Image 1 (tube, one colour):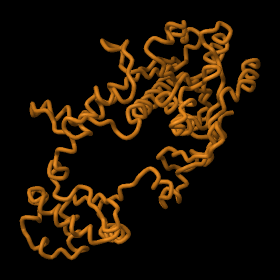
Image 2 (tube, helix red, strand yellow; image 1 turned 180 degrees about the vertical axis):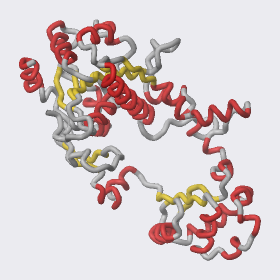
Image 3 (cartoon, one colour; image 1 turned 90 degrees about the vertical axis):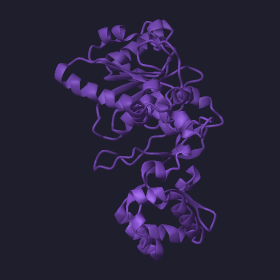
Image 4 (cartoon, rainbow, N blue to C red; image 1 turned 135 degrees about the horizontal axis):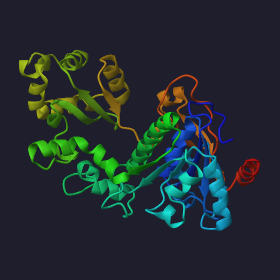
Amino acid sequence: MATESRGPLHGVQVLELGHIVAGPTASLIMAELGADVIKVERPGTGDQARLNAINQGHFISYNSNKESITLNIADSLDKEILLKLVEKSDVLIDNFGPNSLDKLGLGYETLSDINPRLIHCSIKGFLPGPYGDRSLTDEPAQMMGGLAYMTGPKGNPLRAGTSAVDINGAMFGVIAILAALQERAQTSKGRQVHIGLFESVVFLVGQHIANASLTGEVPLPMPERGMGRALGWGIYRIFATRDGRDVFVAVLSDAHWERFCSEFELTDLWADPVLRTNNGRAEQHERLGERTEELMQSLDMKEIVARLEKAALPFSPVNTPADLIEDPHLAALEFLKTVTAPDGREGLVATLPIATPDWFSGERKNPPALGEDNAAVLDRIKEL
């Protein structure tokens, strides 16, 4: 089977018709929780992420703990094999283009006739509606949904530095699948659930939409907001350290302020009654920012971290992805697992950010070679 894990989804059979990020991420989450996942790929090329020589991180990050079989689902014989797998599956996940499966005669009505208990999670650019037939991918979804506007400086919309929308859509997909599995336990019937990338961005930006509807004003992008002041805080931003690093420091409450002043011996600031409240500190954010800049630039990162930790204040070094490879907390948790890519190189991939006893095996099965499990899966079909 695809994984030795006996997590909470052990025994759930998942078929993935996915590529690049959204579909593969949804099935990866299911696999990490114990489901058996068969990844159906195009013969010869497979998942498009396999061919991305510049960024193999896409493929190895989202395809562990799966079996790979190759089927040309436009071919009648291969389609019959797929339908045999559908018959015995609990979940089908796809992130193909709009109407792609319907055009192949593999729409949900056809699939549910074969397996009335099937749950089909369809991740598309848009939910069914006026835009439903449009194609959409991660980056333009960030633009259309307002996330890029809120992320970049005014006049320069900027995508988030990861496939945030695809991953977000995948997580909503898994939430919907789990709800549908619970419903099926009561009704014995499956259903199709639709996930829209555009709408998932709108959900992320919901707080800004709500504020715009209340004020009638277009919200300012985050870089234009003066950071802490816009949120009611005097110290809430990045500062440079003496040794050339960057650290984010947050003082979010009156108790934080007292401990900050005490730890760094800021007796003159503590003596100022105006600064004893969040509102007063927010009004003085420029003054506090300049003072904190001077303070942080006089200290190395190691000392800053020790003192902010001692004061129990929210803070964080500004890390690169490469820094995280050496992070001691992640190392202690064994949060990054070593896998071997199809081209033979070894890389590190993140596990699910969930901690609970007995759900996870602690092992990661390498991303499969294209069609690696053809024989094993076909043998199981013969036994059905």
